[in-house]
Length: 284
Ligand SMILES: [Fe+2]
Ligand SMILES: [Fe+2]
Image 1 (cartoon, helix red, strand yellow):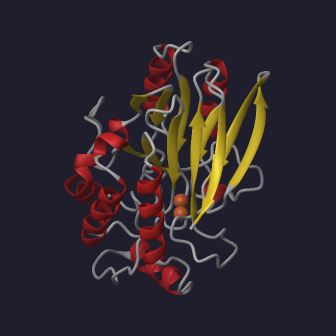
Image 2 (cartoon, rainbow, N blue to C red):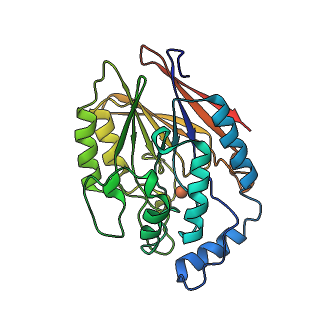
Image 3 (cartoon, rainbow, N blue to C red):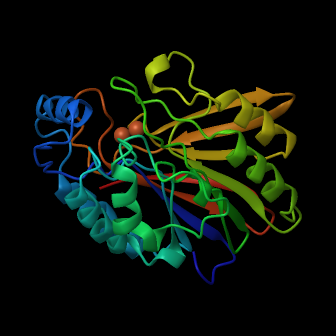
């Protein structure tokens, strides 16, 4: 909390804003995505997302990490709603956003994302093609005792894929960024939509280069990853090359608790002056 000697990061994920308009003229993937969304009525309740936003504002964290899937299909109107939803959590300087597979649903969604959410993207470190926003990442925010590094695993994928990929260029920039963090003063915390290590997860939902990310994090001794995508309040510790890395998932912030998803909530990551961390779970 601000002024307490403890740095707090609110972890929020997977708002999946609803309702979702039918994607006329958008092609097959958005149409099938809309049918899939309709098959799960009531799974996501926008009122719960607003309650999470109010609870996070009341908790007054030093920063908010939102780990993706703000929307469903990449429609222009959805990005307008997403900008309003992000603003409910705080200004861009107090919120870092890690795009998910639904945020970068198709190639034609990318320019809309830049138009609607450009204020929430850091300047592009390495300009890439128009259908790739990963050049804006990683983003580093240093607040209190935390060096929060946000990654982009969202990219347009084929029809039935919810995969993510960081790409070699983003991993290379991450390598350089982590090398520059003063580890005596700051705890590196990674925020990314897809969990980099998730045994049993369908190959169609995985982070393609998760293993490379885990090896990089172990080499730089980064102990904590905040992720979304699974819609579960979960925590798993994996040892890579002798170093323990904890992967902490947040539930969907709008989940009504149906279809195997955990009910809505958020987490507060608390980091003390000795760089020890703990995670508090909050329901709404
Ligand atoms: Fe999601
Ligand atoms: Fe996802």
